[in-house]
Length: 182
Image 1 (spheres, one colour):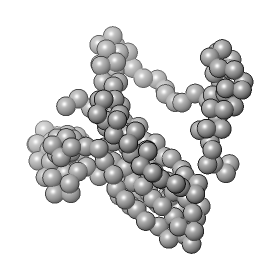
Image 2: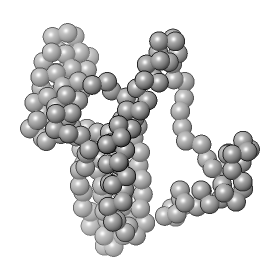
Image 3: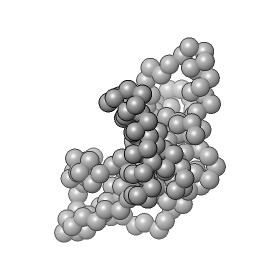
Image 4: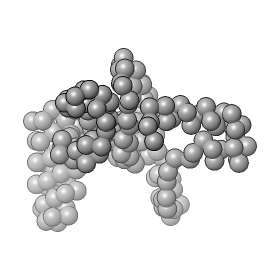
């Protein structure tokens, strides 16, 4: 299993009205081989501020064990060289098997971000592997290339490139920030 570039995405939802659409889209992306959700935390704050947390993942059990072994091997390699990598691989696979998946997020990791969300809203932290990018990344590496930077482009920047009109950019911006109070 090749590991693709990993991205953390934090999404906010004002007065959430979940109908399974987000999970369904993530599942479509998983089935097509585009992305894998390594770990995700969905948090809902009710109108009084009470918090409910749910872990989500689209990893199949065998993928979780294999990914857990690779993460464990990397940690072990850094801590104790080759012998540490072998022990880390075994422990990582065992942990993924016991926990029913790979869960790099702990609830404590989420609180820095989630303490900021207002009552009667929700947030999702998604740790996503961009599996589609593996062949591109490998081709860049073979050409002795490397990533310098990455980021999302604002819809308003697309106007200058002639890709969208000002009206279309405003519509895209409104869609992307619909629930934001900022």
